Figure 1 (cartoon, one colour):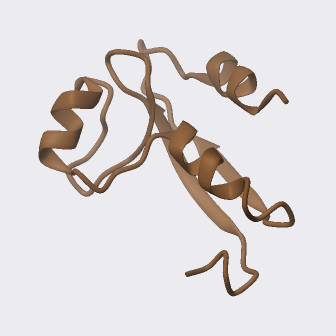
Figure 2 (cartoon, rainbow, N blue to C red):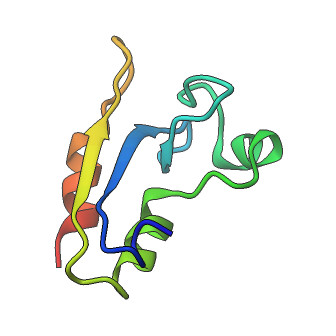
Length: 86
């Protein structure tokens, strides 16, 4: 695992239809899916909250979050800022 090896983690994050912060999947963008529908297609895809909870055990880990946005859909920047607040 990258964290155990002392490496950083890079994430591409996008909002789901119901406002969760999820990674992009091999199926493509998630903005048209709810978290439940996304998990039916890709059960392994974590939410940003799940990733942040995992990273708590690795306080020196570097996290690079790239927000993905689609014109006409919310970018999630405000929600990401709230999720990263201590």
